[in-house]
Image 1 (tube, rainbow, N blue to C red):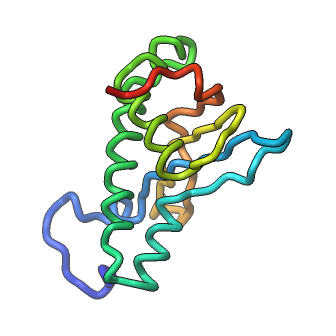
Image 2 (cartoon, one colour):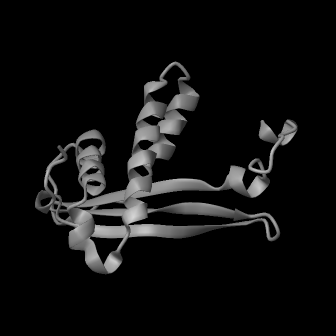
Image 3 (spheres, rainbow, N blue to C red):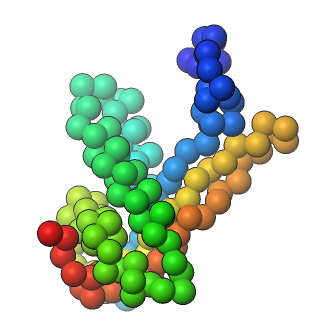
Length: 142
């Protein structure tokens, strides 16, 4: 729809509109890794099929908020510090209870942005953080 509208302002350029954040989640259970899933895209697809299901979008906004907060803390070489932050504990608890909902041995989270480059008409995934860990070693959010 935005391709047919006139958008005013410097922040409405094509690269910013087509750039999107994604959190890919997979977990290890029963000696097998599940395929990576992007629950935000699944929730958006559910919303498109059933627009009255606005609750799916609210879940998406909260996940993006938590993921962004963790990305601001990202210190790959100091995972213990990140793991103990409130933002990471909240994201971990949210993912386990809202998305996974079953026992698991490990979980892998990869967060980044699909960045659009209009000059080449390409999209590239830029990783903000990637963690694989045992979720039981993370303290619950308060």
